[in-house]
Image 1 (cartoon, rainbow, N blue to C red):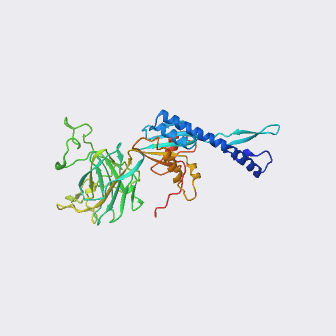
Image 2 (cartoon, rainbow, N blue to C red):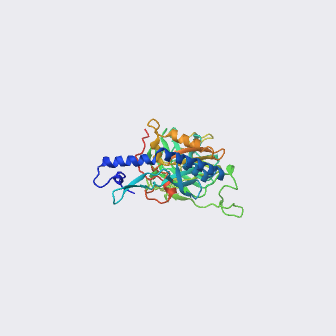
Image 3 (cartoon, helix red, strand yellow):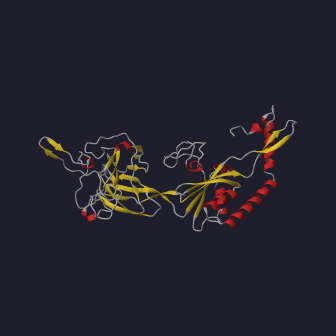
Amino acid sequence: EPEALLARYARAGETDSAAAARLLRHAGAASREAVLLEALRARIAATCRLHARGNATVRALLEAAANALDLDLTAVAHSEDRFWHAAEVRDRLALTRPVFAADGREHAQALAPAEELLGIEENPLVRTASDTVGRHHGERFSLLRRGFERALLAVRIEGVEGRCVGPMLVNRDEGHGVGYAGAVPTGAALAFTENGRVTLAGADVTSFAFAWIGAAFADRDGLDPKRDFAFGGATVPAGRTARFAHAFPADALDRDAAFPHAGASLPMPGIAIGETRLAFFVQSAHFSSREGAQIRRVTPRTHVAFADASVFAAGAALPVAAQLTLSWLEHRAFSVRVLIPPRLRGYAAAADPEALELRNALARALERFRPAGVQLAVDFVDERWVLGKGVLGTDTDSDPLARLRGGMQLWSAPRTD
């Protein structure tokens, strides 16, 4: 209850020091040797029951972790994708409070322990990146990937010798591309996040970026009838029928497109399991034509020859225009993370701010319960909210999974310099 704890230990008119002395007596009774010995017996008995019932399951790991910390499980919830599991737990050791009878005598009454969360994240997400490779205009390449499911791409493009003008990355299998309507200076980094935000040298430039979803075509040398988009017909595989590209913003591919736009987040292409075919482009100049007094500019806009900006693509060997790195969040296979209540940090010594000794001790206690071949790590439930990682919840959120995954505390961003 949202009430000062010390006030519960005071008689009417008593000072705080008298209430504190009474609180210490009740705390001592709650942690006396007989109580701790009984808690140890309960822990050993629970360990035996767990082994008899069976190890290497989510439930066994949750109960074993709770038991090692002298906690009791009250309820367990599982996420729809089965990667997250949240257990509501209570401390077995109960503090008592005084209740004063009419005759002045004092009786002890147990205080209900707070509801806390214990969790498991199966196959936790880690960032995986491709090699950084120099790419030229029109280059087609593939990435091979293992994993559990399609993942969204993050893209990092570093300019090379002034040739990185209007860069664009295309997932040829999805028919989905993203680009930037500007130049990436030599050595500067243009970054697209999975959330569709774009920065150049750390500054937000989403209003100068664009995306499109539609059909992507390869030339005859790279034709794959089973995977390439094609016009309708009986021989076209399902889902490979070509359609006009839909741009974000709507006029982004027009030759007269105006930037900056409103700056809405962009839909990002993904990377599939197995082979994903991609292509990289920069703005490649093409000559316009004149019909009388009218000049017809090249379409799409990415091929318009802007003076002192666009790069002509000529010669058999095109020069490198950018250093390209792709990354994505990948579920780490054969790995599990046990998340424990953050207040347990308080048991760590000053020289061990991350409570490594406690976490390693719990990991050793869970060795007999974890599945063979699965790497186990112990961490604290993080109540801080991180952009792009968690969903900002509330202190009263009744969904244990949201409380476990989201983070409810706003905090100062860490320094990056």
